[in-house]
Image 1 (cartoon, rainbow, N blue to C red):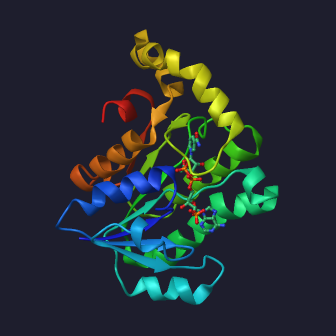
Image 2 (cartoon, rainbow, N blue to C red):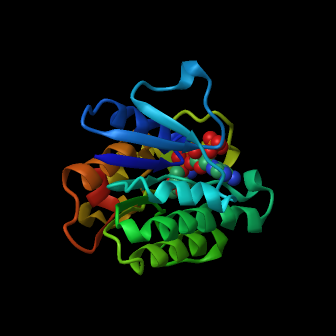
Length: 221
Ligand SMILES: NC(=O)c1ccc[n+]([C@@H]2O[C@H](COP(=O)([O-])OP(=O)(O)OC[C@H]3O[C@@H](n4cnc5c(N)ncnc54)[C@H](OP(=O)(O)O)[C@@H]3O)[C@@H](O)[C@H]2O)c1
């Protein structure tokens, strides 16, 4: 199976590549801004330097005919420097990837966010717009809507750190809450999201249409 991963150097993406690297039946290509240093490279993963601003880079992907495309691209408005740059990374780049590959019809597996079905504010509106684009693409898809991601980041994000500190004690309660409504807000380890991506896209892929995993459906993986 030929697998493409966008955002494989991020919190979720790194965990995803670790899992994919263990599976001997996969040929995995990870799109990266720059080639990682050798000590950070995983065995069996092909790291492909890629520029989302360059149309020719997209053209090169089409002939590869990937079976599954995972996308864990993303940034924050602060890190991106402007709202426009944020939208570029969280919407425009994945959209370009989808549009470039749509003719080869891979299965798409994309990390979105809890709240994308009731969007308010730039972040959720951007996630909702990408979900719409995926659903209208005609490709089979798996969309994951995690809440706050937990895990060791390379950079420090004060808001996420504070949110994680406050919600960690509530994690178990939220997960097991009766009725499961608040389970959608339970923080989740990035490694769990990565595991859910692999199970939903490779082990039990939708045969037509798509699935959206959030709350209990995401946590049960
Ligand atoms: N943080 C949360 O609590 C949370 C909650 C729910 C959903 N999500 C969503 O989950 C997804 C994955 O999150 P994450 O925390 O794993 O992301 P992350 O650690 O910030 O990683 C993002 C990935 O996107 C790449 N990227 C960022 N800017 C780029 C650019 N200008 N050009 C090319 N690549 C770029 C990064 O590459 P480099 O390594 O080169 O920077 C990295 O591979 C995101 O869509 C995020 O919005 C996050």
